[in-house]
Image (cartoon, rainbow, N blue to C red; front, side, top):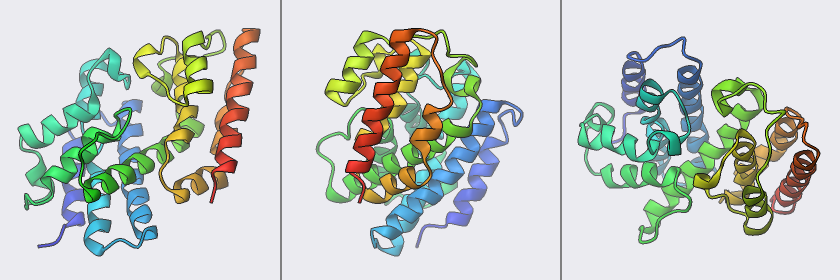
Length: 256
């Protein structure tokens, strides 16, 4: 029995009916999930994967953020450290509460779906995964971040950064140094909305496939994101300019 994507899409639409369609955060997540599923499918196709793996990549895309809806309902935030780990909560909803069987009848893909969701929002992919598990973890991480860049360039600022105006925010020393020196952001150390913005620029360091970087480059996502913000604090603006220049240089040097 193959994966029934149409059934899974219907199950998704049925699930989100229970959440406020007028909530900007809910709207952002529904459209994000639908786009990520398509990006994951296209990434899998670009890697010449089997029909089964292409369908599995699309299904994981559809399920990767299922934990966001309860996060929004209970806490009305996308910030995991202030609420719940949405990847872990998604696994709970699907596998402990039994929602997964509404999306797919077979159990054979359960472990790979579970591990992909757990890894999509972790700092790094966990060790000990099989080759196939690791591949799908990479696909969903790339697909997710690719679409997040799109959202960051057009989405409602308050819904994304918890405030509409970031102009008086500051980029903290720790986050700036992590971006410039470690090429890695410890999300638990972010203190301001500007820090959250910096962590999004750091996504360029965490792509696995050239096709993903190509999408970011061709759509000018970095430039569009950069142009959305000006900071009143002189030092923060200097740091912001340097972050943009560094991210852009990395993107073009690693593009293939």
